[in-house]
Image (tube, rainbow, N blue to C red):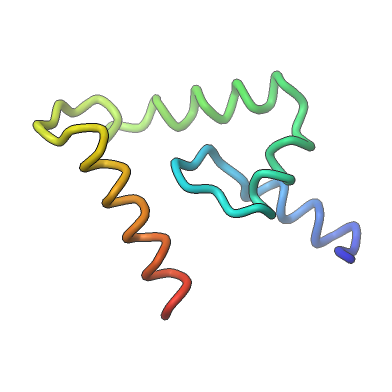
Length: 74
């Protein structure tokens, strides 16, 4: 069971993800809707979200899954 400070830290650091873990899904669900929207807006306001790419959605998802696999394995 998470302590109150661990839960608060988890909520403070949670952001939208293409491949969220179960813990991230739970933390995201605990955020109020207006906070979820604010975090999406902040994510999409980043400069790298305004770049065009030739990557397909499948390419992007595969790359995201690879980053998650790398985090889990080292």
